[in-house]
Amino acid sequence: MGQHDLSHAVYEVDLLAPAHGGVCLGRLPDGRAVFVPFALPGERVRVRLIESKRTYARAELLDVVQPAPQRIAPRCPHYGLCGGCHYQHTDYATQCALKETILREQLQRLAGIPDPPLRPIVRSPQPWNYRNTVQFHLDAQGRLGYHRADSHQVVAIQECHLPEPVLNQVWPQLEFEPLLGLERVELRVGSGEEVLLILESRDPQPPEFSVDFPLSAVHLSPAGTIVLAGEDFLVMEVLGRPFKVSAPSFFQVNTAQAAAMVQHLLDILPLTPQTTLLDVYCGVGLFTAFLAPKVGHCLGVEVSPSACEDFAVNLDEFDHVALYQGAAEEVLPWLDVHPDVVVVDPPRAGMAPAALEALIRLEPPFLAYVSCDPATLARDLRQLIAAGYRLVQITPFDLFPQTYHIESISLLVRAA
Image (cartoon, rainbow, N blue to C red; front, side, top):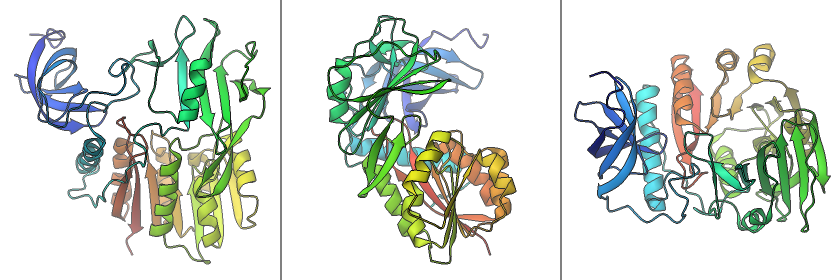
């Protein structure tokens, strides 16, 4: 048989282990791996293949023949249609255990670390309604929704259990004309429960806008930011410290867990008044703001112009903090500095190869790697370990309950 002949075949499969991406691994009768979403290890399920390759296949779940004891009814009626959540079919403790298992497996298989020094996952205080930011797309009728898993088809929604309660009061009141050309509609809530609406479009001309309840609103396009109402930023607060966060700037979406990560870095990093600290992908200065008071000299590297402007405001009180605006792979090779401690918090793609090579050449004795993707983390750790670093510990943080995303902080020490 050719490799695509089985593409719509139906099988009963026993699921063996969780895998990265919110799926479970089973075996087809021919021995190939098959990946099934919305399922749990130990379950027997009926599946239909949707993609069939020579060594593996991907399937959709048709029904659960033998459920695992940890299976529960999902909270949301859109679960399984909208691509936003992956683990609502099990309790929160099981979700966290699955993430620990997956992170360990990725480090063993992709980084070649036989026994990763994995600490217990730091759970989110709120497994629901934890997001300070929510991003929607519009369907053809102008209704707010999310992309269906693995597609650009928008599923209109009536409810969502991930945003903070204030956002859930606001978004159902928003109405849009169809075919406005908006790429994305984003809502953020600040520390005083003020709300910022961000309309993203390729069209430099903003749509007509009116709203009869208090919020700030901006239009983002390649031409720049246009304020439609109120301010073009919010104030976010972490551990009692305010941060200016402009509309285009990134900020951690789970405020309580951002605080937990800051505290963790303060606990594990050896910081003294003699320390030179380098914070790469520093954003608006979330980590820098708490680490700077402990060190003698501090450098940030950030590519986003708006985040750099926010960083300048948020770190204004410190005379010993400097900022380099540019991509890490462009800035790091030219840095004439010998940092004692480096913190990196790259995007999901991990560190650009040139940035990682330049970082290794700087030879920092201590490195904290903040990651939101286990696969790219494992890839970068493999290279760091080959360059003489030892992975002392890795702590997962559940910033995104109900989803497969795994945040973590790894502490590496350069071998003497």
